[in-house]
Image 1 (cartoon, helix red, strand yellow):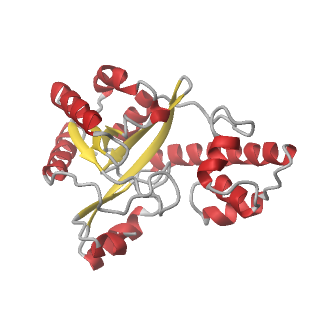
Image 2 (cartoon, rainbow, N blue to C red):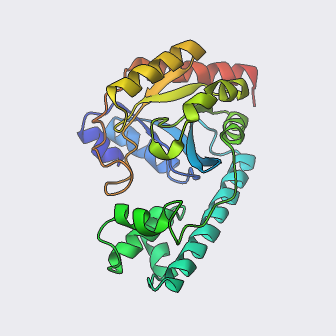
Length: 262
């Protein structure tokens, strides 16, 4: 991924895998080879009622034992959830092998996209999107909930790990009216909001920029690239993000380090 970013002229790339930082060290090393400034990060999945909200953490201290223990707990919950979904799929007559789901994940934190790809391979659906629509979405017959975590919890965890917490893609349909919760999140330490995003319309970008200015948040952005075929499918580097975003994120990180030295 870092090599692809370099070829596409990306100057700065943040690796923000869901509930894991296992790829960060390799990505940073690849960045040195490819001339890409790689920022360490993470993306934490949370819930607000029936909605799914993601919180990004930039510059997290991924070597911190307490933070890694928390991420392991989150990943264990994902594994248990995926197991439950596979059991439900088999009960529904959609034979998906757990071993195949693990192989597709290839050591990454197991999630619904891996189950969805196994469903495609099994010939039960034509696409990952169809797998979510028919089986794995929140109203789907094979859906299983994960351990509950609020966005405020995620903000606190990221701050405790020395990172800068940012609300991810507020215009994402699954996130519901999360933008209305920004004042509460800011009170907990939220430092940024993802403004520039493939699925955000011009009106959304304008609205979120206004929110960022109103609450003193860093306006971030990115492609949310998952390797193609999952989540957003636009190429790395195809969503322009102002260069000052990186400067502002670093400034927030430095300010946090001064207030909470470790």
